[in-house]
Image (cartoon, rainbow, N blue to C red):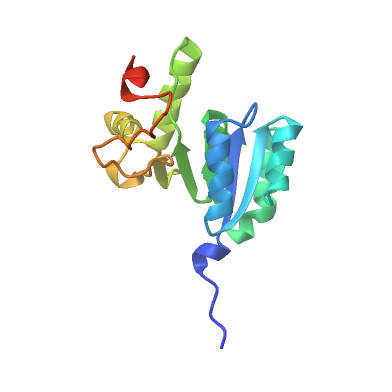
Amino acid sequence: MSTAPSPVAALPIIHLLSSGGFYGAERMLLDHCLATPGQHQVLFLDAPPELIARFREAGVDCRGCAGLGELLRHLRRRRSERPLINTHNFKGLLFGWVGATLLRLPLVITQHGFTPRSRKQKFYTWLSLQLCRTASVDRVVCVAESIAVLHRQARVEGQKLQVIPNGLPAATGQLPPVPTGSAFSPVTLAG
């Protein structure tokens, strides 16, 4: 007796990320690809070869993608599969939005956070929030409630927003016990 494959397990997911190295969002994405059902493929819009090699060594289908034209050609080749595009930063969002809009593919934005320190970063933040308001974006996954608040303030539709805490355990209201003999205590940690 065989069982039908889960539709989620068969779902092709193309992750888009521009990256300079293996940092927080990259760690989260690697863990996500390894632990979540689906046919994951990571397209790095910019990445050092060591990062691509790290994902490949972990068993994740990934490759570099040199620009918007190459991404659109790749998405056109895979269009019949109706892949879900999942973006993880500003350049991924911008390129993914263009691809999803032109080819009418589903689009999920994973918002890891904003660092609007410079005029350029403030513009990227504003544009990211505006793109999330468009019909091309099916869902916005925020890794913290504070990020979802920014989207609500920018009038992103509430039904598009989903908060999935970024690897944090559920809050219990108490700190874990400090191991006996530890050099760290609540006093040394707090100041």
